[in-house]
Length: 236
Ligand code: E4P
View 1 (cartoon, rainbow, N blue to C red):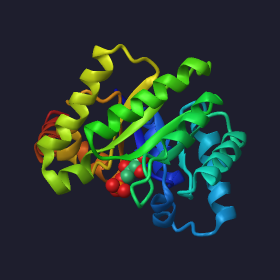
View 2: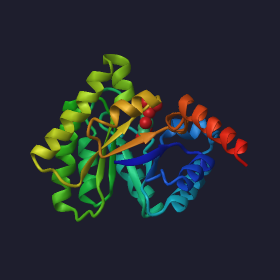
View 3: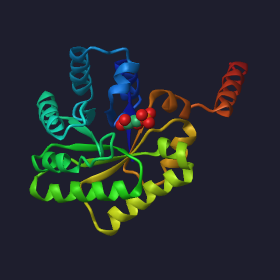
């Protein structure tokens, strides 16, 4: 399972690259706000910087429009910025209108897509269908992603519903032998989320730095290390 870092912070990305834990990076408008980057040009600069830093690993960059024509034009622009950019497009707009026709068009052009804000199994399999059908006419060598927002699903329906959405989608992809489409477990909030959702069958999980750092810590590990170091001193 691939681990992506859900951040726009260069410092955090460097830290997890050095730890061998970064198979890719995901961003969205909120991650740039969190990193204190509010200016459009600065956002572009940061995207270029991250893309170079993690190359050839994928960097997901989200379009900032709900209008299908604008989505298509932004996606085309982003893919010219760097070869490892994956374009994030929400599955529907804020009024519930499907954005699958824009996604289908982009996939047919060979643009790698991360369909985001996926909250249900039905959205996931319909999205997978669009991606898989588009793939037949493109010649993409890299996978497309479906970002299932496990944390947000859990906030509304509990962790079991989120787990099932991931697991049932994976079963469906495997059952119908859909290749080139991967599940990205997103919206992860805590080490408990990492532990639970990573067993559901996602191909990748994107984790914010705070949850990733906490996932590595255990009070008993710290206690054990302290005892080893103290005992080593005694025998010198
Ligand atoms: C990652 O690609 C997603 O954009 C991110 O995990 C969304 O998380 P959120 O629910 O905190 O917005």
